[in-house]
Length: 197
Image 1: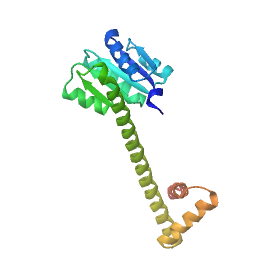
Image 2 (image 1 turned 135 degrees about the vertical axis):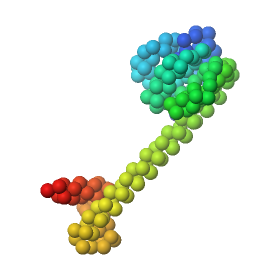
Image 3 (image 1 turned 60 degrees about the vertical axis):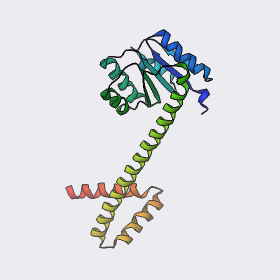
Image 4 (image 1 turned 90 degrees about the horizontal axis):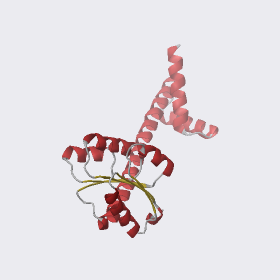
């Protein structure tokens, strides 16, 4: 997606500061910018607009407001750039843990909005890619474990070697047009049921 085609939601209780962000986005060629001044009920606005990116500006945030914005960040799974006027190390850490892609302290200037937004999108994409790769690796590891358990069951029950047990799983998977891990999972479940009898 072209960055200029993005739908951007700006959450800012301060209309003057929101106009600085909006001007920076429009100067960068973004035309689909929505501004919300009331942070309460912002979840419904996000649901309705389905923005590609969210920019949050908190002029003088208290811990409760920051925590609610971090909660929002965890749930929306979108790039989020957050501007705050003051912070401490625990708030920065909480922002990172919540998945805020760019956390900018005391740096709200019109000319900085575009590069910060671009960085937030890039960081979000990189983090999402790493999350997918981790999930794939975990799934692959789980598949290997269940296949090894199924091979062990076949080796014990049929008195065959490991290679022959794997071939049997593979042949069954091909005949049923299923993945080897699915066949292995079914075998492990069935063997577990038989042990319980």
